[in-house]
Image (cartoon, rainbow, N blue to C red):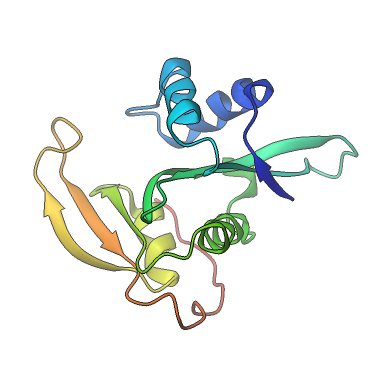
Length: 156
């Protein structure tokens, strides 16, 4: 289930963030700022965790209303199950974008594969965006057509 982020989700979001982005995770203040700036477009994916009945936060996405994906992450144990795709599709339903784009760390092969399998293409680069590493700008060419079929995302 996809729902808006609430402050009670912050502990789970920070855990996912630290596991997903060990080189440069956002801290709690950054997430509070994102919640303040993008309250309608900060979404979480809630699901059963490893067969347990309790619902847990398994992923999140934050995006601007013009289609810029500020951050998206899926808990490492739940990747490759279509959760990231579902979150991205939820974002598209929430805001009718003309295009969707994100900055991706050049070395993040998992993210690059994820976006590529959804039809995104690399359209540019920002030198030293992550301090000592470049960012690739990846963009969805068209949101009018359905994304390609879900495949297994390869990771480093």
